[in-house]
Image 1 (cartoon, one colour):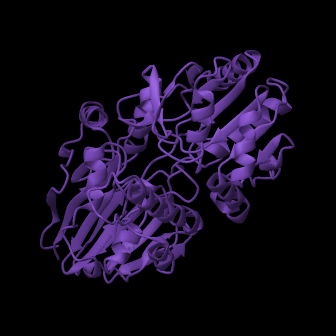
Image 2 (image 1 turned 90 degrees about the vertical axis):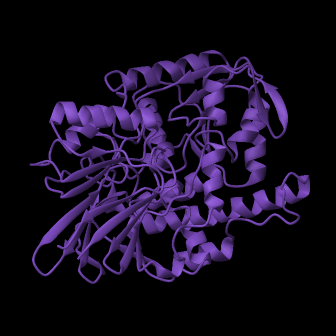
Length: 466
């Protein structure tokens, strides 16, 4: 039995994760993400994949984030008909996120045709809503810790990655006639001591390891996170304006709501209205009731079934309700997506509030290169929104420590639990500086050999003649 891997994404970048395993004549794709961020990366979504979609026997997903799952409808559109194996909660998220991604594709194609900026006479979406529906019909959900046969001779177990609801570490067992080899994909690893999610599961053996490196070169601020959170909220409200928070609909918004209700209950911040202006965030929040085994809020000790029902929280689904927020001048908190200000309803809030010197824009997550959020954080005086250059006159703040990604120390701690070094360790899903830093840390601090940062489209032989 021979096993190869080809890196179709998530190599020297934090996006487009796709890892093609060829196990003799079987093909298993681990993750199927869309490229986001830099234009040169986004253009890869339109490249032909170096395989026939119909030739893939199965797809395994670590979690539902679009950079790990968003290319699924395109692969299905191109002929894939096999099972898409994921956790139960990931299925719940995908039912929300893939339909939304398809809608955005359709709207972008329509807008490009209307404005005439596409080189094509009739711009087409990468995939449409029907493709997304077809994808959802192929999902095969399983709980953590259950052994699943992916293809003949290959078994899978999902372990809790603690990153978002349903996120998983993938442990694959390759069974030949004479021996068994273990391949582990970390997926995106979460933080330790997340108030909502469990810590990432500790594993102690892998023959081949794929480990993410998003924050491989930095340490998240943790010590005074709550004090800093309270300080920033109080400062913003004392300016007699509104606090605007761009936040990812999946994961980040729910953590924010946890802290807002906690600090309001404790009297540390004023009990002002908190508007959740994101249909996806609202739908995602409802999944926490549907999948109690995937988080800590159902624990009796926390007594938190009412966390998201707090009286100060107002969930706005309709466009009309969203628009009404423009009239609020002070004493309100608005949470809206997307987290990097790349699209969604947050753009309308930026359009109406960037120029207001009493308002505060608070970033609570990673801002990728070339995104609108990164440009604002780096102090650009004007930002283009809906084709207009908007003056940035509001207060800009950043809160570190809320990231859903393990930092350098937590990554090293997780990797350090393996009893012996894997035969090969691949550093994936990180910008070059982050991947380089984690590789150096693993080699120097753990003494591991054969630690590799793969290139896009590079292939490796993992096992020969096993």
